[in-house]
Image (spheres, rainbow, N blue to C red):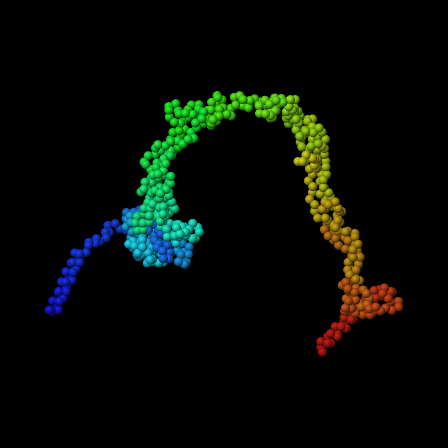
Length: 583
């Protein structure tokens, strides 16, 4: 066979195999692009093109964990730019406690009315209860803790949906029941405006939950009120625990037993309406007193003569149906009407067991001048009322209060008001007149002057303390200078109007050099014959007729001679120092 024949034969066989394969394989329709996938968005009211977090199971490590996303609309939703974010404390050691997973690389879109299952199933669970599920695997890095978690769906335009939960109830440690639990959104609450509320979700892994987990499928209705029934098992209001097929019908305008009728066959409990007095027995038309009025509850219809608050008719009937007749209407004396008025007569007029308490003395008139106008009647029992003068009344006026206390038609007489008075001392003294003080006494209304600093030598009490020129010791003996310079003088003011004083003496001039052995402070520095003194006699020596204090004592020597000697000594010392420095 030639090479060309072999080639034609091979082509024929390949063509036949292709025809057979096409005939044997089922028909796979190509996707229709009549309806393009929409970009999801969030907000309230819920947009037509959006996504909802619909169901999830918490888990980490070797435990399964997944999140179910629902497309509640009719159009497919594109997942380009859509990110699943998990926020939780310390997850996988990530900074900021955040994990993010882009969905578009793994799946392009979610068809209308379908759910998308996202998560991670460890190898150990692949053959377990999740066998056969179609799940978009986010990898082992995807975890869903149980404590303080927020799951978010983010799109190109921002946040689409979010759901926050804390199965640990603030303890940071889930219980065995909460761990690996599945939480499902009730289908009736599949709306972005209500889906994040805790009351819109149920724990479908709970033993008493009628709804069961449905990963990858539409959620089953939740038993949101925990009464054991759901919308599919006859609960006509799954937000009210007292409404279910086994509930007892009550008068409340609600179909409690979910039989399609409201307030049917209800009977008012005993005590709903009053049954004493005029309220006893059925109404004249034969109907019961208690009638159901829907959401208003039972309405009580009472016969004519019924008083709803208190008895007002004193007629011998129990008109307010409280089991008592004419209560609060009979006075203490046992008759209808107002009790008799108590008078000041030594009798119990109002039958309350007390005599002359708070009697009516309006007919008694008390009066007079001044404070006597304030006199009030006082009951004296069988003697009748007398006028009692006020506490401010005085037989003789003593209170300076602007009132006529002795009721003689004059006010504050004999208290000297308006007389001249003097207050203060020294330069602060002021003159005024006597007036009334707030405490009822009299006081001088003069404004006392302000004291100033004491001035030296003005013979005035400037600081108003009762003393003149105190603290300056003017005229007192004083001494200035030390040793042989000391001079005695007297204290004088330093200047006219000044606030200081000083000694008027001037100290004598001091010697330039201390003279040895004379027991005198020649240089006036407070020391006698101190080291460095010159001339004079050795300490402790003296000659006849020239002892200390004698006629020839150095203390009585001529001052010019002493100064000359001192200058010669200083000149000699300087010359010696100059000679020493030149050598």
